Image (cartoon, rainbow, N blue to C red):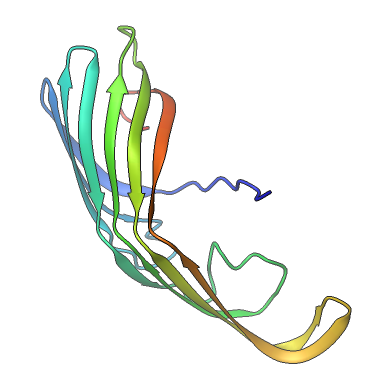
Length: 161
């Protein structure tokens, strides 16, 4: 069974809200760790207790050098990491059952194909019961696909869930 690892992503964005409509524009994720520019846009409209929307994040090509979220599998010496991410999109709904800021969210996510190439330096490594004096190259790929989304959130004026 795979372990679920929580990631906290910092998103540089702004939101314009009218009485029943919202427009969202974003400009990247974790910009202080890598030069990331993943433009994203979203739109939603509220009808009574229900809100429906669509969000789209464009693909990106990142060079993270010696930092990578995916490189933590027991080998030291990461020299470079290059990642390409696919398009992300979401059909999203929110249900506000009460007048307070609590809401339930639901939707359908699409994630495009991602690929990352990691290069590790040459050193003596123990893999299994043997020692090797070698560098390591790792290529990770994920297929594109759809997934359902469900959530519970408490929305505050100056934060976004």
